[in-house]
Image (cartoon, rainbow over all chains, first blue to last red; front, side, top):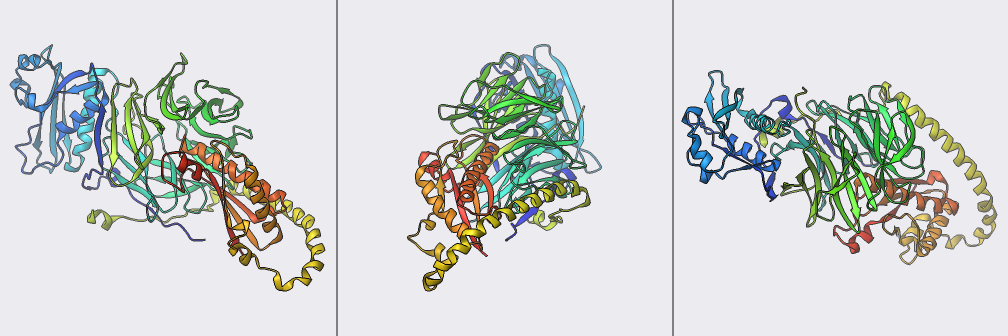
Length: 434
Length: 188
């Protein structure tokens, strides 16, 4: 048997090694947000630096705020002035433009090869500073700092923690002459794409460990599906499940100690949990139907999964101590691939009805079902760590593309790759725990 | 980018069979042993008709084709090695049933042949569910081959779900070609 060509790659950003921020992914805002909060983000002053910066902090922040659906950033051409310090700000000018908030900043040279990125968030109506920070930053981390600034602004104004300074993982495939599958991670705006693993056999179902240090995924490198865990910064990987039949759909428990997974070693696909350290298995479901796509509830006490035990695929919930699964979805002929919001109150899933497959949100308390997308082949929904955005895959022409939609449906944008067919996006956890 | 390639470290791969995995793989071994025992039984039951047919076969020695030759015959039913399915279904229709009976007889009559059943699904819906669906289709085909007398150790099944479409279009004409099980033969 020919072994698949497979390469596991180190992730440099996590080690702090510099690589150029090459944008394979471009962003297109497909639906603007009505009633968004008007903000101005003045280009930061970097005239005192001996070099020209490649990353434009104000632009990164503006794009982030626009994409959230919560803010609408005023076009720079309409700025009445370009202040960099609060004492230069004439509030009435900005008020006349309808602005509620203004972000200003400057990037200074520190003597030890670091930059000093300073920014202030100003309340135009109250004419006072809401936030003021100074970040010592290495040049290569400037984009990450811009995302961190975006998070601080988002949180100060909305009261919800921002999730811009996080990463996403996805699979990119080339289906032409030679097939190639690539597991990648990137910033949430699509920049800094980095290859985790390349294979000429399918890669599937990436799942982030809760600490953001590792990914579990399915690889067909040995001509059958097996589950691997790979530590991102060292590229160390190990096969964790290689039973006969299906080894699929790994999903990390909230405490990082277990994986939920699908095995068909005992005939039809069933849900199991595996203790990562000992590989000890516990079988949760026992049914001749297809049971798959397990996800943990945030409290770690139960698992939501897809099963076609009632006919078509629907979502069920089972306690991790076992027992009878409870059916959760009743609307639509096809409900699968659930992801849970961090507060556990919302489920997003693939909702199929009359030949259309869309992303829908199920509000657990009320039972309300709301479709978030309007394409026909949408799949793989994944919540942002603050529960406000949903990342998912759709199809355009013969290619898979990624979209993000706000949970209120007010904003939607596309992350598109020129080269590959992108699918199975998963949003990673916060970089810093609180 | 050059700089990037220069410092890429390719890690040692295929970390398998470590001591910590023993528990997981012991269970597998047990299962394999049980399966092998079951297969041994099946083989004995099958031995009967093969012996019986020997007398007839001796007169036809010149005309007996090897398994390889049978597989290469263009107008044989064995030349059709893809079974198609309806949406979200693993049901085998009557035409396919006839075809699979021919394949089953062939596998049963040629102990040196093994077949890998690769199940596939169309792109609609979620990917891991489609892995389940491709598996269910491969199992449907497997059951028929076993019923025709093929031995379970001649058959391997795998599901690729929607990961390896035969056609890349996004309509029923492509989807109907992607909902399939492919029979991949090996003559040992």
